[in-house]
Image (cartoon, rainbow, N blue to C red):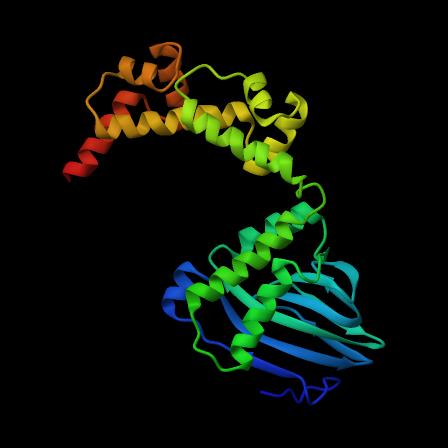
Amino acid sequence: MHSSEKHVTPDSDYFIYEPSTLARDVYLYPLSTGHFRYTGGYRNQRRSFDSFELFYVEEGSVELKNRSRTLTACAGQFVLLDCYSPHSYYSKEGWTCYWLHFDGQVARAFYRRIIEAWDSFRFDLDQYSPAYMNLMNIYELFRRSRPVDEAGISSNITSILNAILSGAPGIGEPVPAREGVASAVAYINERFRYPISLQDLADHAAISPYYFTRIFRRETGVTPHQYLVNARLSNAKFLLRTTEDSIKDIAIQTGWGSESTFCSAFRKNAGVTPTMYRRSRLYDEES
């Protein structure tokens, strides 16, 4: 469809999509997408528009306001707006952009993490990043009237948001460091039954303990120690649900120094003792 909006050139096109119930329940889904050329003087101001909107500014510049914050986006930059909140855009000279309105169960969680990581709703990314390529894939799918694969489009949108999030200043650690964290995570999951120190993990990742702790938390959301505790507790819960092993044996199998230490940590995490947890899961299965 071609736009008849004032200050939007006639060759600008857009496409509307009505997602299925399944998509609304479990996917990130598109609502509309387009490629617009705006002439100078274009202004749009809304109190609310039920979606999130992603721009890639192809040419020119635009002044954007969202949540009482104003920024200018120029060619080569991305923008992510929370359109549920008041927002506006204005360009004195004109601009061209690809845009996508989308939503979904995890859209707001993605939005919050991205804005927190960048401290901005404007992003500098390589034009050939996954964000750009996947935005083009979605637009071209509709432009060419191809069959819509909602799971595939959800994957495209997820890739866009992941690319923006991972490209935030301080998030995109050097590849060796990120690989070191991934290797340490695998090491914990393999050897959680045995004593593991921070130095052990840092040595395994070939990173200093201080730097390792910082990037581990940035990559996983928790400290190395908490990740180890969580791994031990998750495995203990599995054994409590699926075996008749004693609490003491499970404590030993999952790396705790003593039954009392295990029970204390378990109760702090689950809110109940290991025995109460086992009984509640047994009753759930029998009912």
